[in-house]
Length: 383
Image 1 (cartoon, helix red, strand yellow):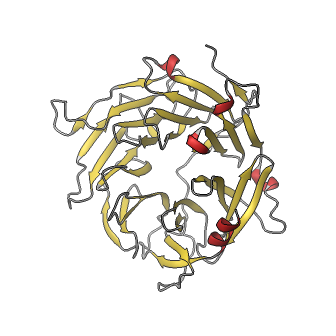
Image 2 (cartoon, rainbow, N blue to C red; image 1 turned 90 degrees about the vertical axis):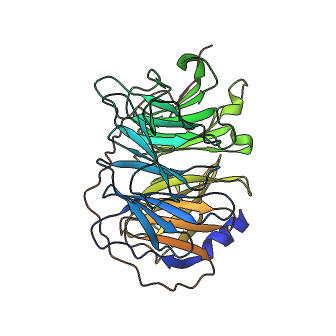
């Protein structure tokens, strides 16, 4: 933990993006993977996707053919040039970043009335899964074969199928397990965090476990050795953490449950206004949560069974709420994007060579945060 504390505290701004001057902010960030990869993708609140050079943060090109709101960006794991995005118009698009074309290379179409607000691509790039808002009484997890190429309409893919019984409200987050392509977790405004094994024949058999966070889920992730733990953040800044390895034992499954991290983080006089997301640091075998303040400061918190503990604070970067981050464990650099329309690259001991920080360019948020109370912290699927 001390090494992580030193690394985080030593981060300094290496680059700032010279982004547009209109009221646009960055919602989600991902980076290309593999040897020689050098791209960063960011979804913007104006329904566009910016592709940046990872070192200079210069904007290389922009995809702006999304008619509705974006719900994230993901690079493929094994093909550094493939970039996926999901849209509330009921489509997931795959972009070929080697091409200058403004049109998507492939289009994954959902069922009628689908409004996608979350998605992910599994670790071997074979499956794309998107989650929907609740329409009437329907909530779907929709699946496609990411390899495609079997339909009569070129470049357009129909779903393999869908799950529709495991959540009762909007599916806000989907996250595949980093090591096993058949395992995926979902979070919803119904308060549930579900774990599925897609190798099973039907939805009922696929549902391995259901954990109840007690509130509307905003973020989910995997942690621990062999990724046998799952955790979530909630829209009212709560944190829950479970160990799936304890499902068939007498040991408690819940490792930690905090209703409000703002009150439990023990930051002293320093304030914490919100949580951004979590990160499992494989090198150190530690789970961390990143939070921030309305003025752009960042707080890294370590997670233990005894609670959340402060690790370090970064200041002087953003001037408004930070919405997304990516921690590159290869060189321990950090990318952050916020409501001040900036993308920042932080490196250990760096000296900034770009213009100073911008003021907030925040406009009315397109993200509806529904907070609901639920009982039963955890229920195990009955065999």
